[in-house]
Length: 389
Image 1 (cartoon, rainbow, N blue to C red):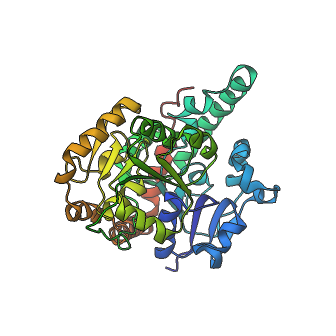
Image 2 (image 1 turned 135 degrees about the vertical axis):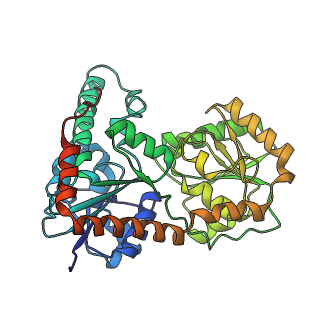
Image 3 (image 1 turned 120 degrees about the vertical axis):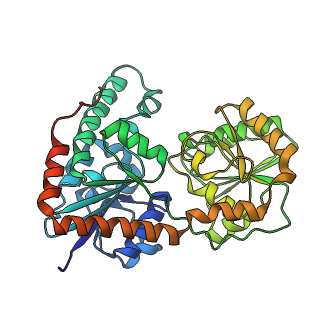
């Protein structure tokens, strides 16, 4: 049977972990790509410049690539308006709305879930914390509505793939659905460990609140003799730079080869976010660089304590200070070759094999017995526990 496939992703406005997963998915299943919106400037200089990318009606809004987060109430209508009826296989890559694309019973929908919609579920309070009065009340109403919509849409997915065990548990908590863990692809090969390292600590991150780069910078106020390099940009940059001492260097966004060079020469990589998976710490380990990471979320699955790094238990300056001091006492015990060997389990080749096997196995089962798959979907759509308000 000739099979028509479509890919669905939230948006294409820059290169992050989700876009690296999407590139790998497209490499295995080159297909039309449906997104809420795209940044033409980013597309022009990226992998996607020759791909058939189909944006939603949100693309008609002036400067949408700058203000799309303010268009959250429009996401449901935008993603549901796509007509994917000609396709047999729908492969979505989702951290917001992509998984809620409309499908019918003759289609198989497999979702690679980077996370359930953060602002609708367990990180809701972080998005509301600076709001008061009527603005907060309106935001709470919106997020409650988005949570109900997100929950209902999850049952249009036939099979979930989680990017980590941590996200698998969040999928279970949010949607009451099981998932299979397939770790994201990390391009291990460009990162070569070097015997001679610099004396600096390094973090590479988008400068947004949940990444906690401000915590790292404030911690280095206590270590004026230690050098911290920050690579990355984002809306929090000015605020974070105001916190920095002379021992902190901000380099902004750098090209891939430059980042690789810094990763290979750093004394240690510092990662303070509670991340769904976290590709940057794996890239650091691929370069043979030990990681000092917050001990929660995906880092617990990617960093092997005592072999490729160590953890700090709280997102506080005191906890991170103690971890840095512990690292310097144990620094000589970390072996670059062992660190790199640990990172190899997250390679692109491993992802390709696992993802393609999963998709083809589910498709063969669906094609051989579609009635059974339809019954499973109808059962899943039966009312379960409603999401808490």
